[in-house]
Every structure is written in C-alpha cells, then in structure tokens.
Image 1 (tube, rainbow, N blue to C red):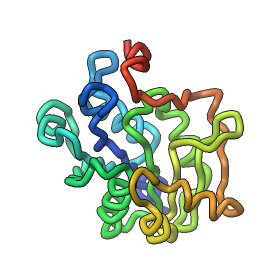
Image 2 (image 1 turned 135 degrees about the vertical axis):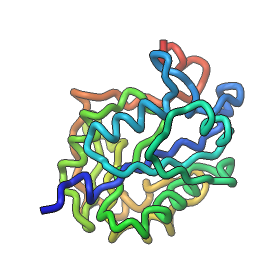
Image 3 (image 1 turned 180 degrees about the vertical axis):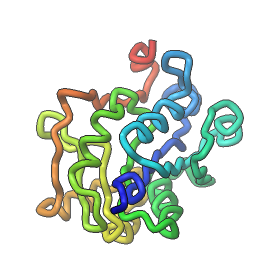
Image 4 (image 1 turned 180 degrees about the horizontal axis):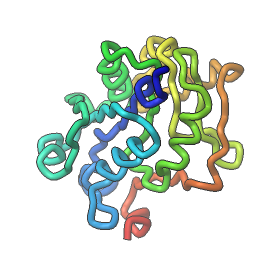
Length: 199
C-alpha cells in the first residue's frame, strides 16, 4: 500500500515581492531566526508531504542562496509581479509529471498555519478527486488540497491575483471544509504593521 506522503505533494507559493513591505521578498522574512520559506517547507514535510515544490519569484537567487531548501523542487516564476495565479499555475504544471494524486497548496506569508493544520487537511481525502480546504470559524482559507483531476480547471481560472478561489467557489458541493481554527491562525504578513507577528 502506498502511503499518503507518496501521493500528495506540498506546493508552496513563495514568489511574492512584499511590495507593501518595502520590497522585501516574503520568503526571506525571518521567524525565530529562520526564513519563512524554510518554516513552511518543514511544516509541509512534518505534515506528511514527501515531495515539496516551491515556486520562487521575487529575489529568487537570494532565496536560493540564503534558504536551505535541500530536496525541494524549485520552480521559477519570472512573471511573479502579475500575481499569485501564475505561481499556482506553474506549480501545478511542475507536479504534472510526478505521478502524485493531489497537491497541498500553502502560502509562504502565513506562518501561523503550521504542520498540524496541514496534516488535518491532508487527512481529509488524498485522492485524485480530492477538493478540501482549511476553514477558520467557517471561513475557507489555506492550506487547500487539490486532487489532480482538478488541476487543469484550477490552472485555467488562476490569473492575476486569483488563485483557486473562483474554482473552489464553483465546486462548492465537492469541497470538504476542515475546521483548523483551534490549531492555526490564518493571518498574512502583508504590511509593516504585520511584522510584529514574526518577533
């Protein structure tokens, strides 16, 4: 029997340029002395993702040089300034040849969401038909589990800053919501006023 971690890949979107953070790439913001991108990769692995693909964009070379991302597949998004949609598309494309049946999609600027929430969503159903998302007091958030059967539809919808949101809304009846509010906080690190959360 194949274990879950062989069938589900972690997909970390880490291309953002931190425009409202004075242009500091979000992947390299630090929490407890460690870049956010490393925290997120570690959380995905702890949750059970054996394969992790990381989409880089802003300051990709600096991220490669400063963060320990051994064993990850690094995907470059040269058009990262056009928004998260392109990163999601490229990330899913990079998984198409791997044989995994689902992708657990996480955002690098949500360090309040750790391995426990990721594992909970992963446990929802990890087949090619999977469609699940964490929810926080009933509101849909990340991580999102996308079965391979959904990748083409998600990619077709993912443009600009739109990730999978429109697709998930359109497939609401198939979507399993997994309450994670007791184990995670879904805040984003978007502006200078959010940086206190990293102290």
